[in-house]
Length: 73
Image (cartoon, rainbow, N blue to C red; front, side, top):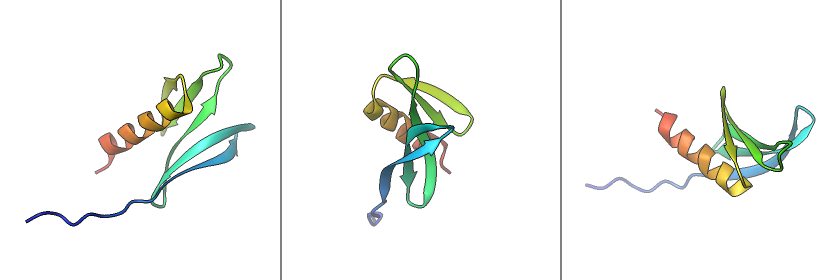
């Protein structure tokens, strides 16, 4: 018996956080984390209390999704 497939709404929206325009990732109705530019022309990826670094926004989105799947339960 197989599981039925569920469609999950994933959104990336721009929001001001701490005075900077950030990309906020939302899965369903839950805000997962955000991506903000840093001084080195790269990006900081914030997932809860954890901070990761990414070269592009796409890499940041991948990091947030992988962390979300790792920690959901």
